[in-house]
Length: 461
Ligand code: UDX
Ligand code: ADP
Image 1 (tube, rainbow, N blue to C red):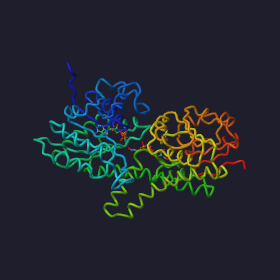
Image 2: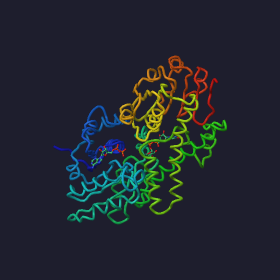
Image 3: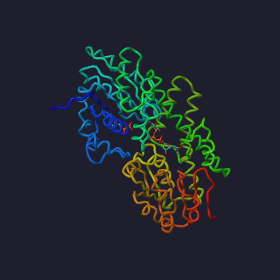
Image 4: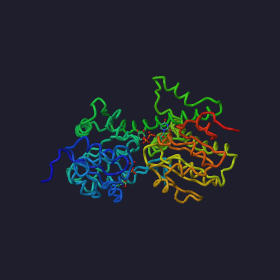
């Protein structure tokens, strides 16, 4: 006898957002049947295996306890659309690389294709929930596609429910979110659909943290949240450049500034720059939207957040060149960390991609090391010309190198035996700490010439 479930939920798109989010819903709501579909058969096979397609702390355990019970991964998109009344859409929405808005607007081809698939295969009314990051007013476009066709009595309610999980802490972020945002039309059926979605989250999230609004406020809030977070990083990174000139210490400045309760301490760590699939994409969406409405000053303001991020990465390279006697040709550089942040294997928009390519332009020999991101790093650097190797073990990776460029804040890097690393490196041995996680004084005493970010360098000459 098939088990009768209280609700049937579908998610289209089994990526970094869809997979973990649905695993969490299945975990929190054992009486719901949750299906995740994707066109990518390899990805689905990986979700059904012991080797999940993404690395996320805590995810394995949740998937293992729910998969086959009330969580199912499949490639049967059409059938799944027929069988489910609540459909989350979390397909990829990268930045457009062609045509109008290239390099700025969102590429909505996967998203629109999904909307049309939902329309084609639906045999009953559905609630469709935008989970992917999308430009403002895309829910309206989704509604036009779905309801414009007047399919014999079938009605679609389109909701926006943006994702706020950060990779590396996704499970915690979803278990105890700061807030959940749900946007809907404020019509009778829109409000009913909104209520359905609120009831899902209310199973484990206090109701006061579930915020409802109209769809456009909801969509815009997501873009603005990410733009604000990225802006803080660009602000502190801009100050890091000034600190390097004035011998101030950016960590001391961040601490002092962040203790103002109006400002707060989070997201003030100077770094080699922010990466990830969201920040740049969302800001560029915001910029495109502002330009569309002829708000050029507003567009310029937000675009500068991205420009500072690019400047910070270029500055990292120039600092390396400058310190290493203006030539990197033929020198072996060890990149420690390729993921865009710690605790993920994701490398989308990782500053490491830009830096590796720039180092290769300077004709350096690269060794890339990362505990989880080497497969993605290989893909990212495919076609880059020059000498490059990929070695997971940091000691082996650093052996014989002239410099270490630390680009991801993996906690294991803090605990490395730098005396041992120093012994095996070419001299003078340099460390460029793009995340400020090492004990700089100790590394200096070992013999390294140390270049932190936004702090005075510690050098022997
Ligand atoms: C972000 C948002 O935090 C999340 O709410 C949204 O849903 C998706 O986008 P994510 O990109 O996964 O999440 O990671 P996040 O922790 O925000 O880090 C983004 C980048 O900023 C990383 O490259 C990180 O290393 C960098 N960063 C973060 C800094 O350089 N300094 C900081 O102080 C904080
Ligand atoms: P995110 O980080 O937003 O989750 P990903 O790229 O990791 O983005 O995941 C998006 C997933 O959506 C991919 O696995 C992709 O194959 C899938 N996808 C894209 N279009 C469709 C579609 N029409 N039907 C089903 N899955 C799709």
